[in-house]
Length: 115
Image (cartoon, rainbow, N blue to C red; front, side):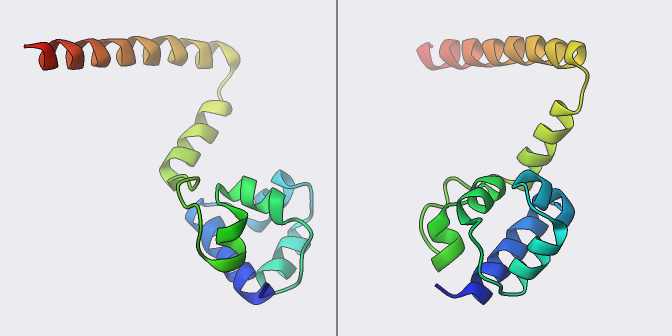
């Protein structure tokens, strides 16, 4: 395990997601200072939590390879954060609208493939 390379990947992914060191630290229940040290190559016991928060596999963090399908696009993550910051009544309203949109899209796809 190469801590400097892990730190480089953590910083790369954190930046892709638009997270500050402080925000990432909060997500994994540690400090901004700890994230700073990890990104500079310090060893860490937070690999599982980091992988989950960054949406990558532990193999990707450690070796730079492995399951990348678990990675999320920064757009998706930022939209999810926007959604989660809404009041409950607005989230419910968007859920209903989105369900209707998906239902209509699936129905039109089904009708176009059956013709």
